[in-house]
Every structure is written in structure tokens, then in C-alpha cells.
Image 1 (cartoon, rainbow, N blue to C red):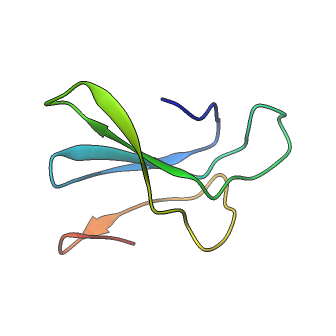
Image 2: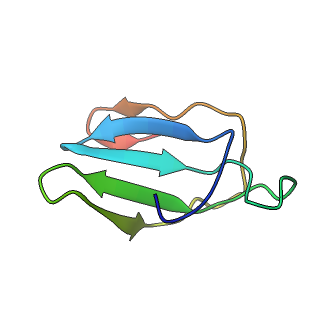
Length: 67
């Protein structure tokens, strides 16, 4: 995972694992970054960031969309 974080949320969508938000390496700053892991390639890639910083929340894929 390219962005160090804890307190993140994750969901599987379209064959990829998305991890979002959480608390950064400094232990205090909530993040808005999203990273996607593609098991077919074994690589991580950045995804569109969230509009707001979040930590300790839930992420759900519903009807093919991240919520």
C-alpha cells in the first residue's frame, strides 16, 4: 500500500481492493487519499480522492459504486 495509514476503510469493487482515508503516518492527520490494489497485476495505483478527510469509517460498494 503506497500510503501509510491506520483506521482506514476498504471495499472490493470490480475486482480491485480499494482502501480509503484513515490516519496518516504522523498518527493525527486524517486522510482523503484512496489507493486501489489490482490482484491481477499485484500493483497499487492511486484512485480519485474523497472530498473530505475521514478516519475510522465504513466504505461500501453498492451497485458497482463506492459509497
